[in-house]
Length: 473
Image 1 (cartoon, rainbow, N blue to C red):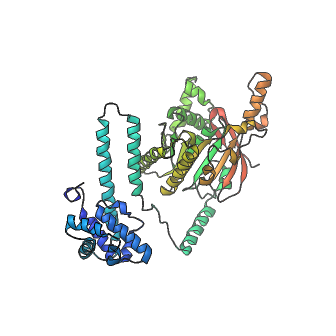
Image 2: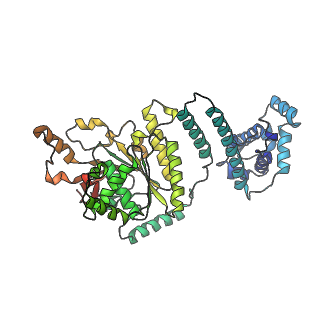
C-alpha cells in the first residue's frame, strides 16, 4: 500500500499523536488504553509506537534516544533509504511538528482509531465485493465471515466505555446508597426490572441491568411461557423489551402473548387454538379487543434462526436504534435459546469452549449496553433418569462457563408434567394427576450473586401461556 498517496489516509494525524506522546509521557498514559500499535496504518508509526510501549514499560518514561536504541542498524538504513531519515531523525521531526500538551489528546487518539477502522472496513468491503463475483462462492459463509470481520473491527473501537468505569470509594458508596434509597422509596422494593411476579421480585429485587440471567429447564417445562410472561410484565412497566427467538417464529410467540393478555380479560382461549385457527368469532373479537388495549407495548421480536454472537450484537444495536426512535429505552433482551446460538469458527467442534465464548459474549453485551439479558437454556437430559427430577447446576449442558458467567440462574420445574406422564403410562390417558400441582410451577433460584438461594412457587396455566403470582415454599 502506498500510504502517502492514499487520499483516505492522513499521515499527519498519526505523526501528531506520536509527537505529543514523545513530548509528554502523560499524553501516552492518557491514550494507551485506547490505541494499540496496530491502530497506526503506517508501519513506521507502528514501530515507533511499539517502541514507546516497550520504553514506558521498562523505564516508566518516554525518551527519544532510548526508543531509538531499540531499532537495529538495518532498520535505520532501510528507513533512511525510503525517507531520508533514520528513526532518531524521524521521531525528532514528529516531535517538532506536534501539538504539545495533554489537552485534546484523547480526541486525537479517537481520530487515529477512527481512521484505522474506516480504512480496514474499506479493505474488507472491497474484498467482500470481489468474492461476491465468484460464481461458486458459498454465500452464507461469505456473509458470515464478513460480519465477523466487521464486528472484530468495531469491537476495537469500543474502547470507550458507555458509562464511567472508575471512581473513588466515596462516590461509589454514595451511588450505592442512592440506589438503596430509591429501592426503599419504591413501593415494590425493586432495584431492577419487574419480573411481573411479586415473590420473585422480593427475592431478587427484579431483573438487574448489566446482568446475565440464565433460565434453564427441560423441554415442556414452560421456558417460552416464562419468557413471554416476563416480556409482557416488563413492557407494561415501561421497559423496552427485545426478544431474539431462534426456535419459534414471531407469529407463534405473538399467539402465546395474545392468549396471555386475553386471560386477564377473562377471555380464555388456548394459544394453540389461536395458532390453528380453532377459535369462535366471539372469542376472536374478544382477543382483538384485549390486544388493542396493549398494542403499544414496547416489545420487539426477531425470529431469525442460526445467529452467532456477532449477529446477535448487530440485531441488538438495531433494536436499540429502533427503540430510541420510539423514545423508549431498550433495557431487557430475551434470547431463546442458548443451544441454537451458532458458534464462531474459533472453537468449532469444541462445544465446551463454544458455550464459554457465547456466554462470555452475552455477559459482555449486558455490561456494555447497560441492559439485562435473559438467556433460556435446555438442561441435560440425564436428569430424567433421577427420581427427583428437579434441576441442579450440574444439569447445565456442555460447560461450567454457564455457571461462571451467569449472574443469576433460575430453574423451572413442573411436577404435574411428570405425574401426568406417569398417569398416562398407567391409564393410557393424559390427565392431571394431582390438583395441588396442576397449576404450579416451581422456580428455583440456583445462583444469585447478591441474594439468597431459594425457591418460589407461581401459578401457571400452560394452555393459555400464563404465569401469575404464587406463594413462597
